[in-house]
Amino acid sequence: MITSLDAISEAGRTIRYAMGSNARTARLTVLMLIAVISWHLLL
Image (cartoon, rainbow, N blue to C red; front, top):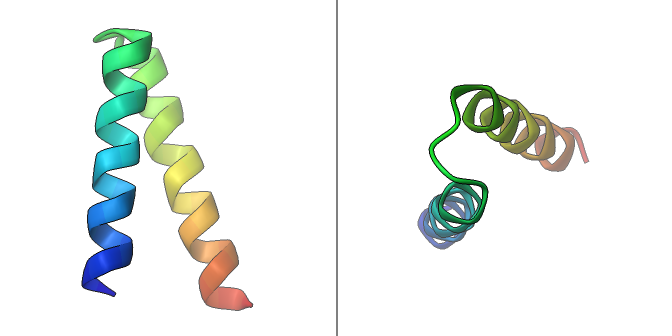
């Protein structure tokens, strides 16, 4: 769990840095991460 959360945090940080500090992009990124986490939890 901790490793996965760290990986997700790093991924989000990288995406946020690549896309820039755009509010919409950040919000979409968070929604995407939540969707991926939910998908993995369901599986």
